[in-house]
Length: 409
Image (cartoon, rainbow, N blue to C red; front, top):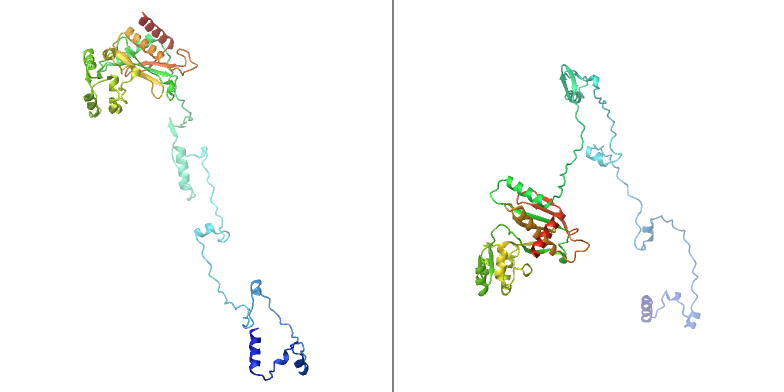
């Protein structure tokens, strides 16, 4: 369109007849067209089709410009490739290359035959072997065959090793429960046979059928043994004023108030007493030393009778043989009930008092049990360094009933 406008503008400036105007025919100018001669006819010219070369799809689809001459698509001549020298295969290459390594011919070795019993040498002499490659192996086999033989009166006899068997594990026989009186006698006898530098304590270990993880099955209590524990108990009393004077009169070893609490707190864990008794007004103050007294079982507790206003009675009970017991994490109660130098009847009454207190501490949440069955599983009596002796439950029941009758009368 721009070329036509350029041509028209040029014809207007130059009114001369242009040689290309004869090619255009305008229907609007009829007079001028009738006066001008008709244009020469245009004859169609045909050309022979040019042979086309077959090109790949990518190249044939690409547009070609008429101004650029097509390149010669003929492939370039390749240089002749020189044959590569044969490669020497290594053992490492043969592991990863398949069917490329040179063929390896199989190697056969002579079979090894162990000597038969009749071929064994006599007297330990080893015959020479012709085959030098198997000479060392043959000598080793023959020497192993000669070793287990021994000569008895000129006759060679083979040592026959026993066939391995499984040795059964020998379990200790279970101890049979015995009567309480017999158990006390055996404990005293075993303690007297061993000469100790101290007087051993008669201990009771009771396995209970309770779950210590449950709060409603906690077993805990205290009792005063009829014949005492046989050892001197040092009692400390936290009281002031009349209570302190009453404790000193009852025989308390240590009596004090805030100064005693401060002494325990700064003492580095050293304590000069075995039992603690406190009045109710001192319980809030004892929180300063609770971490020292608690792990040792010395913290006063109202359930055990160690927190009371009757200081005199509590001190006398502690001095006369008051024993506290509590189950551990394995539902076992450990308690000392006297010394081995006590008489058999004194130990029997102490054990009866403990069994009676143990029945009174039976938790309410323990169901489907009778008086003893299901609650007291096993009762073992022993000395401090002696063997444990299981005791029958009926004999314990007789001792507890006897103590109860004595207390009532």
